[in-house]
Image (tube, rainbow, N blue to C red; front, side, top):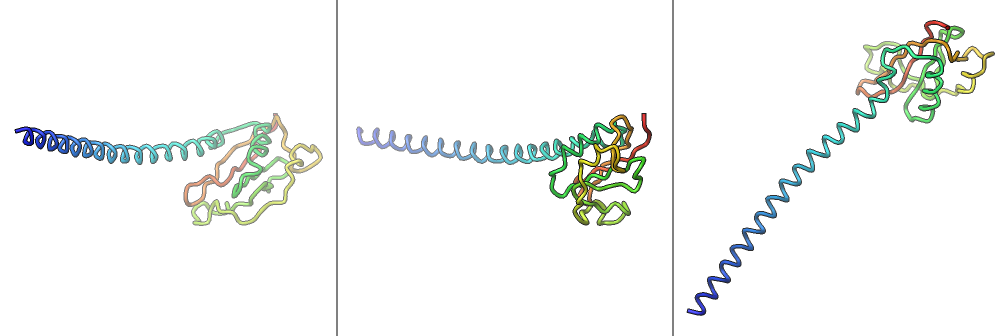
Length: 161
């Protein structure tokens, strides 16, 4: 009788151990799925936040001082260009990368075609055709490539006040 009781206790212990391990494995698998979903959501949020910093420039009117601030902010950004068209230089000047913006329906629209050697310091030099009047008004435009990645900004002066 003592052996049977011991055998039942051992069997119950083994059964409970197996049940506990099964529960832990099920919880671990569920946690893995939840973690993957959270990582995907976090990645989406990161992408949105990265793009959100450019929404202030999406078809808005900004001041010349905001244009020069954008030049300083994004001057070192890789694969990114800013074109500034002033009243003195309507052809425009690219800073950073030069982007293909010739035809929006073209697959290469927004892609980097070369690097610009333009000096941002000229935007503060009143004698330069690249001078950006801090009081001027500029229409801002965001340039996205075929993958919908922001590759640059275009600022076109609309008036001087």
